[in-house]
Image (cartoon, rainbow, N blue to C red):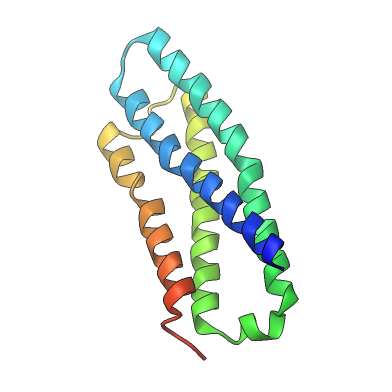
Length: 141
């Protein structure tokens, strides 16, 4: 099970690296009015999204594998159920990033660069909360 846990952690780190950078590209995209630069940013956004999506599935898949290894324990733990809620929120965030990319492809201006600066903070808060839940287990039982 240590190998499964190690792979889970590796894929979570890789997913977060991408999910931290992708909205930053949205900030630059929303700020820039130069067509060639915007086109280049769009290519970067699309490639990064396509790269991190399988990493997200692998992170969740290995996490699921860990969970089913001791399902009764995990389902009885409040900290774990909170963590699962945050993983669901992060997954929705991830797919919302994909929706923003599709809007950029259509030439729409979904939001301002200020919105994306704030939007970029959500995964930081989620990561912070998940780490505290997993390490500290504040709601044991």
